[in-house]
Image 1 (cartoon, rainbow, N blue to C red):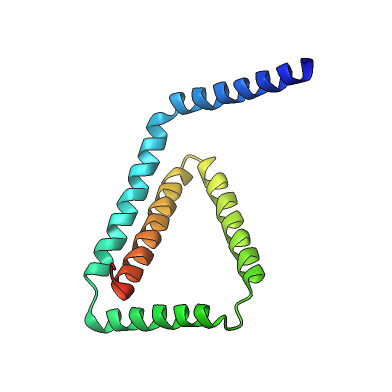
Image 2: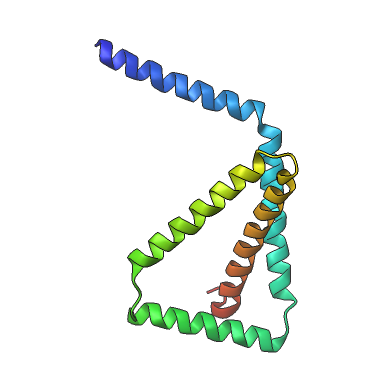
Length: 133
């Protein structure tokens, strides 16, 4: 009984700390979300304004990549996972370091905007290639 009570107390304390943190920093979270969404919109606008030759290059690249995925052509998922984790860990350390300096805050915002741009560009490219079905 005592152990269950302590576990519930810890869980409620964790929830309390998280909700308190969110309430105290809601403005910063909203700024980051807005910057990320701006990056996504810029990525979509960028794809919509590319030339026909660039469109065909993107179509060729994405089509060949998906065909390789369908055929399971020498794609080592473990290596892809390790590479992705390594790159994201490096980015997280970089963002943490830059966020701890006054000048670095703008670099953090630019990085978040760039990640939003990459996401918007990628999704728009896939939609451009395969269309909405």
